[in-house]
Length: 341
Image 1 (cartoon, rainbow, N blue to C red):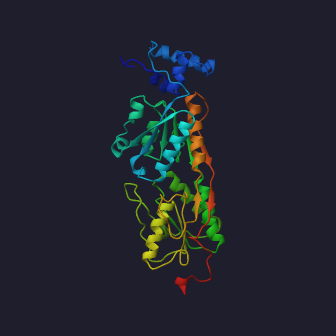
Image 2: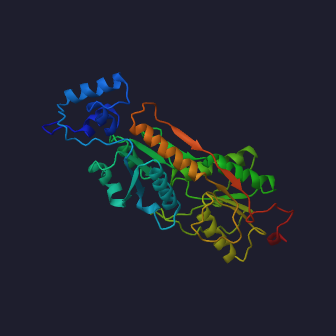
Image 3: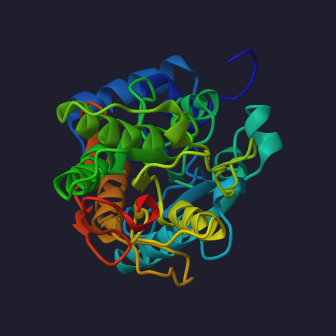
């Protein structure tokens, strides 16, 4: 340790477990195998750790769980602010406390640990929303039990809980195809986040299965370089339908379509994703894929509690299903749309 006194967090990082688990092992608390306890105690002795009785020991009945959200995703009444509120309520229901930290762009770019970890305030961390790959991979090496929510990574060394993005977009696109649409575009920056990429892949799969061509000029950007949503730029020639990566992007698209003097769904059908419009009405009401946010929150909290309790198993991704909701923003394609007459 180069002269620095070893801490429980140092031991946890070396073992690849949580600080809570190390605390339980050192203080003789029940709830783990003798093999794991022995491994932790040997590592503590090897690192020169000495328990004085003053080290923090956290009750598994009252944990402080950090919720870290990149600043670009946390606007008022955003999808992630709604998920955050649900997480706080669910943690409280289980007798725990949720601590919010907003991850600003500078901290993320400089790969600085969040204060929740630096101060050892949180016994577990939920990463809500996808930061840079370098940042979330660094985060998972901290020794703090970590759950990624709404994104995943095969090298992240963390549990991941996601919605059924690929299948949801596949269902929506297939629905449009069954209704006669063959010229279908997609709205979303495919490389912006893993969830948008997965939704694009669902759209692409439905087009591929039905031998339909994906035109690159009909794959529209919906975000600026800072990740903030912006109205898409419509091409001169338009498809008869668009699948959007989220409901807010669909709302922007509908506004741009109306500026062209076209109607939804009479001239262009539109679907969204999430079943979340930020409290703003969309005219006409939007067909979408309803993400099971309650199920995602429940599973995220339960996974976090298991990891804090020292459960050892391979990290993995769990997909929580949702369901399509068909409303008035799309319709079967007639032989000729009004704008083709």
